[in-house]
Length: 191
Image 1 (cartoon, rainbow, N blue to C red):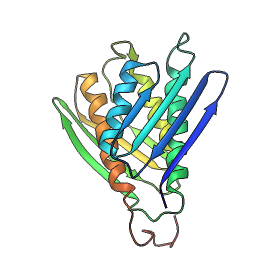
Image 2 (cartoon, helix red, strand yellow):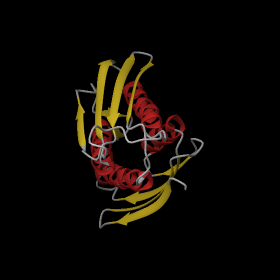
Image 3 (tube, rainbow, N blue to C red):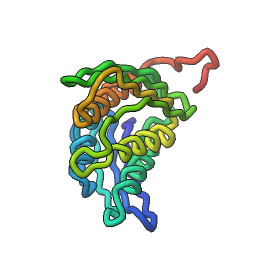
Image 4 (cartoon, rainbow, N blue to C red):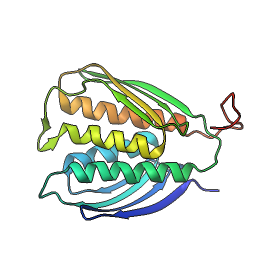
């Protein structure tokens, strides 16, 4: 049985369609209207090994906050639904360097949503992309996928490097956490 799904969400602020195949090849077909966000999500697809198609429109004349947060909501919901009742490794972590940046991401896909990070960015913008939009995407993604997600910056000054490094780390951690296994990893016998 395939671990894939297509879902959509339309609000007064955004219109988002996402197709996700967890057992893909790392192909990303991303169109959010925000160039740097497209770049990050394409990298996320590659490093997670997921096939991801995203078509997202939003009130970018206001700013990108609603769009980035809502993409996190829909992508997180898609991941949660696509995983269904499959037995998975559950935990994943990675420590990834990129030039001056060094990021740890650690995941527990347990059904208990939580998000924690430290001060990731020294700059408010990467080009025209507000760095807080990425934090809002991550929070929405963690809450709606029902995972515990910790992302910590160990080192880094260049916000572009930090953003790319953390999205690669997240992808690699998810690749491990979503790996199929034979039994449920829980002393309770259920997640």
